Image (tube, rainbow, N blue to C red; front, side):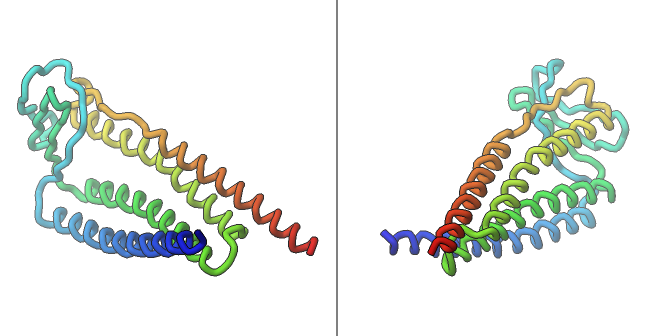
Length: 205
């Protein structure tokens, strides 16, 4: 049983290291891709899930401000395909959201890596692991306002380019992030309790 547990811990440690390295490569690739698109392409392509009550068939929406070059709506799919002029603010916005998401992900991976590595050296019940779990819990909780910020930005893009009155943005907040955060925070309390019992046993001996 102990051998199985040690094998599982080693497997998780290796997988987290692989995920860490892969994510670093992904960051470099996406940043390079965003920079390349900004330099080469005149338009920024992105899709928005919307609800259109006026349209019953696929159609091209004419430009209102001249900034949007082309917008195609598919009522059956509720998908608005847009080409927006590739400006510096658009690049900064796209990079900022990507950087913010990756920051949360990298912190989560780092804390989990350190925690599983500590299992191989000493008891899991330590104050360091309690802090790691609480930090991980906070990062998962912050994913919810990140989703809200992204939805709000998409709505402002629609509104800014004269499409907000016709289209209603389809999307909802993912409260699963809060559930995961709560579960991890409870685990942190369990680890803290285990650490306190461990200290009491040492003092008793």
